[in-house]
Image (cartoon, rainbow, N blue to C red; front, side, top):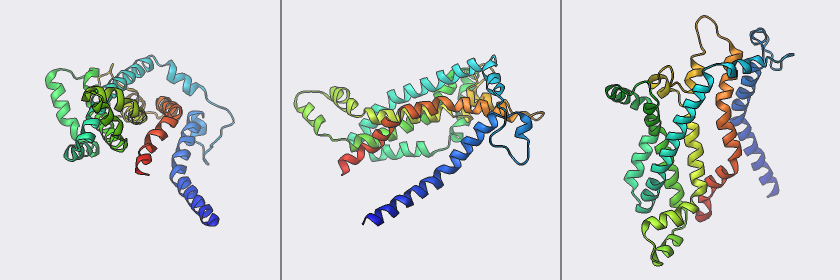
Length: 274
């Protein structure tokens, strides 16, 4: 039996390495590009660890006059879209889970699976008619198309897996539905809310399509700003890779800091089923 467990562990480790290795290698190569001069980036055979580091690639990103503006735009759009998604999605997920509204859950799943491009044209026409193009508001509203279904779907699964006995006891003690939700369901659902928050932030922060179409010169977000560094005349891989890593850093740090809560939120539903 111990031999079988060892083989199973080795098999799982091999599968994990196969799945994770491409992402790790890609991330390491991005770090390498960001730390090399253009001469080293164009060298053949490729150089992974350069003899001298080009820290100026990162300095040029932070010295840009518009980097602070684009960072603030991303912060406003992502923060607003995530906050509104939690405000809407957590109660909606609780209601759907407790009412066992299967059809509503299917609608949420369809909304989650539908590509963002499907919403882009009607949203573009609507915002153009309202005269809101070039402001941050269209991007915030458009990002709700991504964040709200994520939050609702995660919370549906989480509330369905949490025990209902405590809520029933609160109802017997005279609590109304709002009190049950506020004082019983929400505290229990904190791990699930954390997972929903992290995923909503990641999907919103990294969104490119809505920003490139709906944003103006002063309302671009960081992914769009990185894209605008591309040009037909000259492509500087070092500054481009440095900017891409700077954009990735906030969500990476957030995920690392909250990894315990994420694991707890993803595995909490297994307790009831066991």
